[in-house]
Image 1: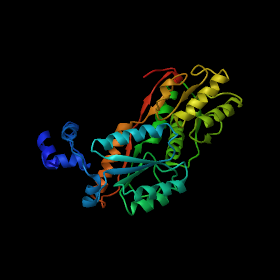
Image 2: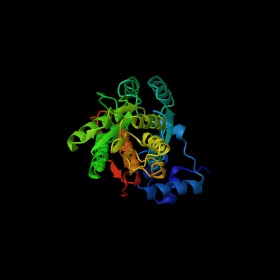
Image 3: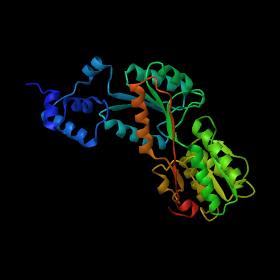
Length: 334
């Protein structure tokens, strides 16, 4: 005899509607109920037919996601948090890498739409050139911008308050007695780089700090961190502190300083941004700005679900506050 969803619901002690929501990836139910339904389905050998459901309801229980480059260690952590959040409602994540190229980003968006994903999460490559992909997707699917956003694009976005994060780093090194500070970050092509640069400018002016030399703007990579450190070492003197636009830059800079026998934090303080997994393992462990991945992911999926339920909702922009994690690179521990 064929096992039906009614059998699963009876065994789990829930309504058929609840069992259906769990197994089809519809509206969320409590984790305890979801686990009970899935365990009952497993014990009974019930197999949910996702293809049939998609034909009946126009949903595939899958969500697409495009990241600028999977090699950046911050993005995998965010992807994992999004995937965990989606799995709570039985949905799958289809991931694509844009390879830091807006034209590739557009092709990946078209590929995911062809796979009939229910919605799309995009971390835009560019604050301007990524608009083509967003415009095309938004005309056909619910789309949420995550972490980064396209300037002057009216659409949903959730991410950390980048300007606030950098200001926390600047306030931290100022409280430790720094008077001169250098900024090493990426060219302001994406919104994260733009907002972190703005935050640095505003915070140093507010705190009355002296900016040491030109702002060193390259890319969010350890290689650029090493190159920027060489530029600082070639100058007449080192600043009291270096605020880095992300942890990769900071790790590269720390390595170059160590090679040149510059002592961190005795000779110069260094901060990063993101709190990637390697930040605590750096030499010395890196003071940084932590992004709350789970909170960001939860808000992202909440926005996506709301947009899927009502395409006419006003666009929402949610900036989540980051936190400072003090470690030995500034001579202190949280």
